[in-house]
Image (tube, rainbow, N blue to C red):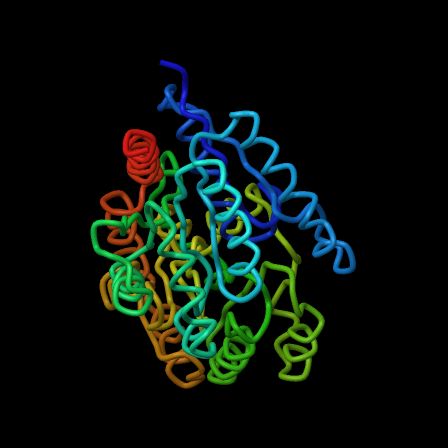
Length: 362
């Protein structure tokens, strides 16, 4: 039999600066290596990240997708969807795929989709439900999001596939040995209010004021200048480096050299960076939102705090900065939890089965 051709639709292709691009990169590599009956390709809905041109390029990307469908180069459309403009853009791709008789898998990513949906008018909520209802399968990343898809979007349970994000294992990963210098704290993500960077810097200043030693890396694009100004104003700029956006190699280096990973977001789905930290046996401090409580076992693989709570975040930081044995134990437990639930091998196998069943049902 010929291979199943799967087009994975995502905003900026594999070169995008976000978690979706990293997850799809990992997924495609694994499928290409271990599932020869499936041929995957990435399709960008926007051809440039330049602000004045990215929306203008959407029709070109859609036309290319339609042409591939018409020429029989696509058997399954795997469409990644997030809140706001992503939903309406991906609705066009769903319409095109269905017009050519291609089965559609909608893969729900992005933070705060429940809040986005709740803020829509009844008419637009109906349009969102109709969009998801056209998919042969809806992929949710966790039990939290499966319940949202079932209860709010009214998708039948047998059309929902719960597949957590998966990232590659790291050969030789182990809890980090205690170094000579102060503990290294790592944050990876878009710098800004949604990821709680303002709260993190305030909490770091609070801990510094108590005399605890630490160094931090806040890696990511976004509101870098504002974060630097806040750190300068609080007198801790000399302890924090801001390298800007970091690629796959830098992510590995910073996490491998780090002692604690922190992600104090105000809104999330299932953060990739947390899984990457767990895969390297690093303890995680994060917030009780979205699917994070299903990733991080509070008190076992890390510590969870409420979003926006500087004092609680500072207390969690204080605990792990001062207790190297606990950091090591949590890191080891996190590595075990990653291997059991969040490996890219498991993720790819489940998607491969989903692609096969989608073609069979068609």
